[in-house]
Length: 193
Image (cartoon, rainbow, N blue to C red):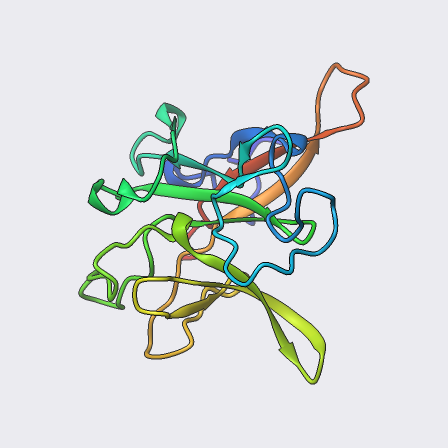
């Protein structure tokens, strides 16, 4: 159906275009160790090298707001990421079987657009389960610079009125192949209104 004839469906904005982040099997589960069991490590870095294939635990993409198809994957190397410009970067990873995509730099304030962590890269963060009386309610990520934590589903910070930008993630069948794998697709959450 033509979108011009459907008043309930607005045309997609440029900043809300989907892009492929790769096949799901290229993302090791950062909540698991090399043997495939739950990680008992006290400080597993999100993008640290994992598994026998020595794959990084996440992927980072630069996705310009004005031209999303011009996205480029950025190599995650060591701890020198804090010196880089993290503007318009998305961090994509798998934690405990679920895929997440968030802004690479930690949260921004409501109006001032200033980062409470000096744009520290969350690829250095530590993922964790949000539990209540032993029941897992959600997943979170702790920024190691100031120890702030963020809910990976809502983006809410554990203190202040800060919110991490959470991106939409879809797993799609790979078109034209018989491979039993999915492709990870990501986009900015579209603004409503």
